[in-house]
Image (tube, rainbow, N blue to C red; front, side):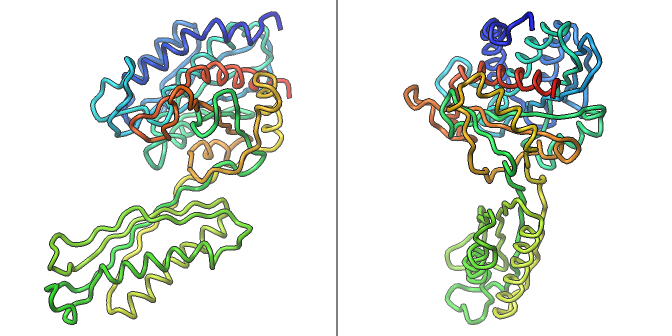
Length: 390
C-alpha cells in the first residue's frame, strides 16, 4: 500500500477526538438522532462518498475501491442514554437528561475516522467498504433489523464492529473466537393477591410475601436447573408493591433479566420461571401473569473472521495486548448482522485509572481515554483491509 494506515490514522487524531466530543455534547436518544445524522451526513459528503439515510435516523455510506472484490461492512451505533451527564469536562452533554454514557459517541467518531483513512486509500482498494451508522442500539428491539431491512447487508461478505470497553485498559483489545455477548431477555411477573389491613394478614393473600418467595426460588434456577458448563445469568431488577406501611396491597410487580448463549438453556430457564410462579402462587392462593420478551440473539463471532481481526489488532497494539476474554453477559444487536453474514465484534479498551477514567458503562461519570480512539480506528481499518484480501 502506498499509504500507511498508521500514518493516516495519526493525521486523523484531532478530527476523531473533535467528532467524539461533538457527539458527547449533543447526545440524542434512540430513534431521535436527527442532529447526529445530519452531522454524519455532512462529514461523509465532504469526503465525496456515496451515502443515504437508513432506518430513520441512520446512515449507510460506501467507499468503492478501484477494482471489484468483496464488500466489508463496518458498523457503529450512534444513540445515547436517558442519563444526566455528570462529567466535569468542557465536552459535557448540553442536552439535559441525555448522555453518551456507553461510548457510542466514540463509536460514531471512530467510524468517521475509518471513513477518512480508507477513503484516502480507495484507489488502492480491491473491493468495497460499507459504513453503517446505526441508530437505536439501546432501545429494544434495536436498530440493526431496520438497517438490514433498508439494505445494510445487501452484497456484504463480512461485517465487523467494535465497542469501546471500560473494563479493559487503554491500549488493549478484547476478543473471542465464538460466544462474545449474551442474549438480553427480560420478563415481568405480576402477582395478584388480595389486599387488606396490615393488622389482619389472615384475611389477605399477601403478594409481597408471595413475590418474595418467587424471587428466592428464581435465584436457584441457574445453580440447580442449568448445567455448570453453560453460561447463564438471571437477575432481578424491579420489585414494586404497596404504598402504605399498614396496607397489604392487591398486587406486586417483579421484573428481571435472563442472559444466555444457547436457545435450549434460554427455554429451560423460562420454563422454570413459569413453573415456579405457578407452584408458589397455587400454594399461596394467588394468581399471576408472566410476560416474557426475548431480546437480541447472542453475539457469536465467526472464528475465521475473528482470527483476521485479532491479527489486525496485534499489528496495531502488539501481540500481548490482544486478549482472548471471557464472554460478556451484556447484549448487543450487532448479533442481528451476524445472523445474516459472518462477523466479528471486539472490545477496545478505554480504561485508565491513573487519569481517573474508571466509571463503568451507563454511569453518569462515564468517560474514556481518547487515545483509544486512534487504536480503534487503526484496528478497524486494518481489519477491513485484511478482510478484503481474505
